[in-house]
Amino acid sequence: MNMTMRQQTPSLAQSAFENYRKELHQFLARRLPSPQDANDVVQEVFLRLLRLNRADLVRNPQAYLYGIASHVVREFHARAKRDRVTFDSQAVERRTDNPHHLWPDQLAEGLGLSRQIAAALAELPAMQQRVLLAEMRDGLSHEQIARELGLNRDTVRQYSARAMAFIRSRWNQCDGQD
Amino acid sequence: MDRKSPRERQDEQRLAERAAEWLSLLRTAGSAERAEFVDWAMESPRHLQEFFFATSIAAELRALDSSQLPQLRTSSNIGSANVVELPIQPSASIPSAPVPRHVRSTPWRWGLGLAAALALSVLGYWQFVPHWQTYATAVGEERAIDLPDGSNVHLNTRSRVQVRLAGRSRDIRLLEGEAIFKVEHDSARPFRVYSGPSVIQAIGTEFNVLRRPFGTTVSVIDGLVQISMEGGASTAPPSTTLSKGHQDETIPPISRLAAGEEARIDLSGHIERRVGNDVAAVAPWRHRRLNFRDDSLADIAAEFNRYNATPQIAVIGNTIRARRYTGSFDANDPNSLLAILRLDEDLALVSTGNELIVRAR
Image (cartoon, rainbow over all chains, first blue to last red; front, side, top):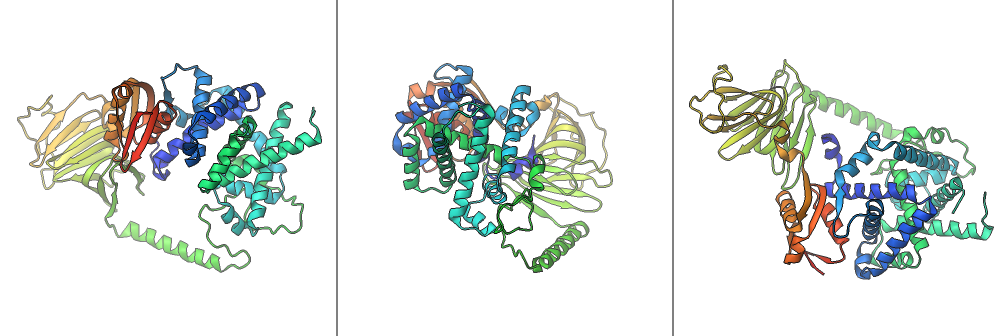
């Protein structure tokens, strides 16, 4: 019954898709550090991707990628029967909107991860930090960021990619494996 | 701990950067770039994995709460000298619709002051000169409106209300459609909803009003409301006219309803009451959930179509129509269903104008 939230949401369809994606990200964020799990999931997604019609894929690659991945993840989780699809967008919303509904271990993992990311972020040079937050958190385009920070677009692109790769490398180090 | 050669690390770094670049690029990519991305992603599972890594990091960053980042706020350890300090804190979010920012001059502060003064005077106007404010929703749209008094109006699809908050009363006209009113208690300012000739007065409560061509239905979710007709008598014995179903001999000019009760009021002021409703079942549209348990795709599509003008989902072919699914969806979001169907390799989804056809591939 979150009416004010609803009002702010630009489009319900959009937000549901976002939620759906959030759940996937949370899952991947938990699985990817474990090479075995990550490989299982990624291999399966990859195989299914190869079977898809390329034109469809090109039309909206991200939607297909996330779609397939969340399907695989769901099967991975529940070992659901074929032809039966179980999906609860409300559960997804609850879990993403209200961290208190998370299971304790999930919460701990989630916090650990965001702490890791926050720590890695803090190590970045100030400008890379800003570029990254402006893009990923505030949703600005490279063009807008370039204008905002007085950089040229190529620099923004470079900073963004470099900063992401840096966070990625920290992630690996924390597990001490790959 | 680190067993990797410098070469390996370099490759990893390059791959991670590439994945991050794709992630950024995809937000605005044209079809040529998307095709390139698909090629890249299908080249190796490693690429895919790295892309998923990037999306996960991006998702975490999006969810970052500034309060979690005390380190950022104080990070003044800027290495390079050619970095220009902006007057924003690193952790302060940059507005999503950036306005031209004059970093070194201050005239905008004047503008801001002026705008604030204007906003204040508008606020003053709002409080002292009550006027009617209109809110409306289109087909399929739903909207929640927070009123300045703390009350909330949740408009159902294709509905229209006018709101006037005055010093001594809060008046709402339901011109069309349906709405739930969640009323902030304020005994000095009665909250009244006018629907045709009927007046519904709230007594710290939550209730649904549906206006129809020949009458109004009021359902109370919580608290108490009092119904009267415009210009009608002000008091009458409550609860003497309680009846189940539709036979109702005495026509009271006024009536009270409690939680779970519902009344249908026709244009002449005849009130037909129903008691003993399950509160949870009142105004089901407010829940907007569609739950399916091994239901056929045909039924699921029909249900979604009731709630959404577009797309209208048509399922073709008996085998496909009979396929069974279990799930819980937001009724307003057919895309959540379609996203699931798209993954089914046996199905083809074809969009033609307002219609979306699901058939066997």
